[in-house]
Length: 412
Image (cartoon, rainbow, N blue to C red; front, side, top):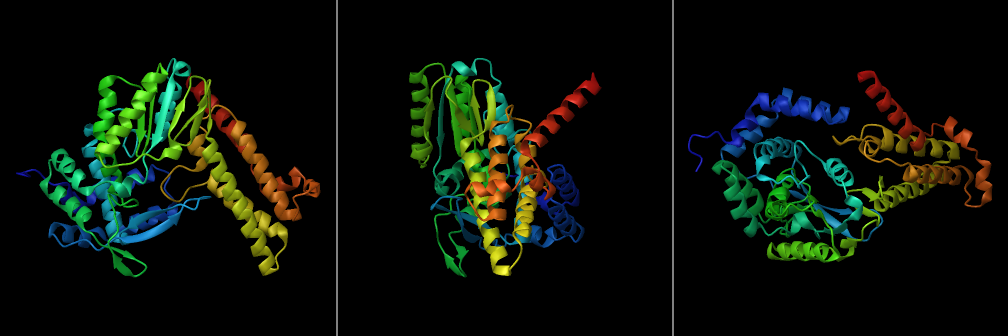
């Protein structure tokens, strides 16, 4: 029961909480456009009508269902969004929940937490003494967010929260069967609704018991949402951890993605959360490398078609390619996240993948400019690509390292 406690729902109309949230978003390299929208939302008290409707028990509007393609795959995934005002209010609520209830989660959980992230997980694992002598057991949960059985989640949620009003509100979102898809009301299996802000907290909570088991056993383990990895000194123990995780997931009504289940032997290159590790070398994972190359290839093809359709010189298409990937790799992400280079550079300690990406970007540009995949493409010299604005990932990486070393020297 709530008693005299203040519900987190009461804070949704508190301007001070919104200002704190705004400052937090500023610290996350959020795009100027996003920050401006949030600033205007706060200054015009756009949150007040939504907060009042929540307090009065007015049902939330139905979420919109969208189908998103996974890059380079035929497989699709479903995501859900609420109208912008409601979605923004849910972002603040999630921010408040993740902070108030962070004590529910074990140290091995790294997703959506205020003081840790995926990079922290990779740093911890790769810097662990003796990691090269351990087996690694890794698996991925299939369609985790949308397949969580709500009827099993609700008792866990009610026990975890000391806020009856908050529980009833979240329950109303989870138990609403409808969604808007292509202009009509449908009733899909939504689970905790991937794409909605509150799904982050719920994804952490639903498998908190699994994280706690590994913490109690003292096993080197990490989970980020639907990705789990555990380490063991023997193959038998590592296989046992895989079996234990799969049995737990089965009990919770979830399934493992068999294509992403791996057992790595000591010294073998393993991958986790977009990074790879082998014998001291921390690099970008092969999966992440292939994804970025596919984006480059697709963009090169679309820009060539665009230039041909508009009767534009190929140089203009090449400059557009450079501008797009310079922004993606080195500039603000526009989604409140670290840019690509700020995400990877502080963690990796080798330039192997960066060299491969630099070479591939040059290949794409030479194809755009020459229209050929033959040796004739080498008539386009690297110096010319630099004049068009191409920035080298390898050079930028070593600039960051030199700047970091200089700052550390200055402190000594």
